[in-house]
Image (cartoon, rainbow, N blue to C red; front, side):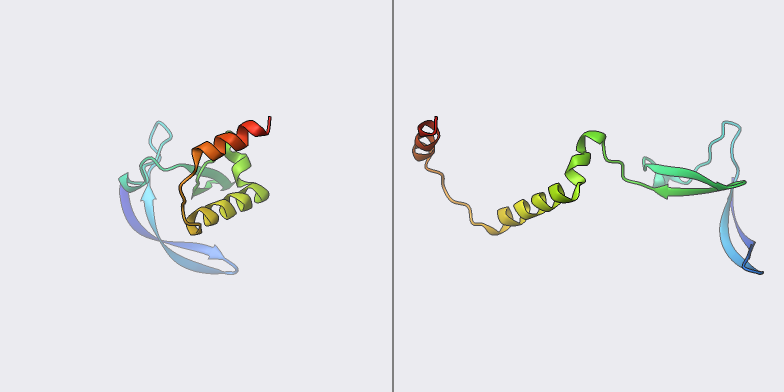
Length: 104
């Protein structure tokens, strides 16, 4: 069930009017936010009695957290910039093999 309503919220000594959508929590404890939000990840925080805050989030897997640490992120950014601005050149595979085998 969905209907648009006007609500009055007591804030700082006076009422403020807000437009809101009235939703009914189903018997299974769920509400629908609409098909346009399907598949999104959100956090749901209980911020007061009978008050919830729903926030869209991007979740980073633990195995990828190291990529977002400041030093690593800065190094990746530098590498990407260099790759974007440095012209490509053909590699002499014979010379590369010689360099690699002579280091042993």
